[in-house]
Length: 331
Ligand SMILES: Nc1ncnc2c1ncn2[C@@H]1O[C@H](COP(=O)(O)OP(=O)(O)OP(=O)(O)O)[C@@H](O)[C@H]1O
Ligand SMILES: [Mg+2]
Image (cartoon, rainbow, N blue to C red):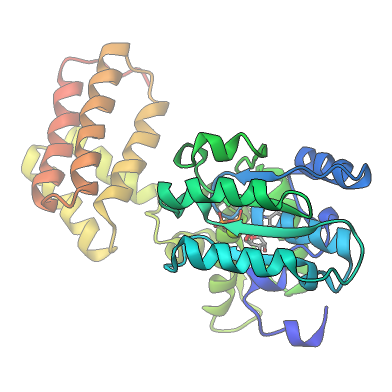
């Protein structure tokens, strides 16, 4: 590892340098590599959830095509910058029309966060793409393909980046754990993998903040620290609150929930997600399950719209109690 990389956040320090270091996206990597080897690189669209390697893959690809001085041949634009399409158009024009330093055929223009562009800008972009196709290739990066203009999408070969498989993240973390001399309990790694939900950036960030929060760098990272760093409720806390909703009277259940929210700093939305996770594992008859999920999804919508926390807390208790009143649980 180069010396100047030592102080970087781990997401940058461990950003893949080559396509071989992109974990868990081998089909995509193989296909784009083949395009390059055959000299038939089309315009590309990479889309999918955050932290799955879209930016990393295109940069690694550029390095593979152009070598270490790839920056001369690549223009990186952040499409969500508040600068308007005219600025983007001019930058692309300048870049595409300057002399090519290496005669590698084409230059690469990376448009990050293209789904944040207005539809007017996206419309303008499809003309630009057509105009410069002779000596440039575009790679459009986005989280959601449905926010992109279909005409724009149809000019590209599409690749969907899936949430990275747990095994691939585990492999990557194993390397980092060795390089950073971390001691971490196996169940803490497993929780980290579950909570990261296929987002490698998140996994690395949480691991780094856990390591930074140790009193002594040699201490062991445990499951509780992972939950605390992510700000997710511990499974046992979620179970305690749910248990109280199911078994205690309304007031006691409300007070228990309130206590956990205050003392443990839990957000109602996280508790709710935890309840759904647990209730999904119960063997309930279909009607009860539908009733609970429907009720809780309405509360979830209410919370996301900034509804009153107390009312939503009561609503959660109401939904669960109501659904269970006519139901015998077979756990
Ligand atoms: N497939 C992967 N293999 C190895 N590391 C990865 C992978 N995906 C993400 N990472 C790590 O996470 C960091 C962020 O990844 P990257 O910028 O490629 O994500 P992204 O898909 O472009 O996300 P966003 O949609 O938020 O832009 C990288 O610096 C790298 O450390
Ligand atoms: Mg990105």
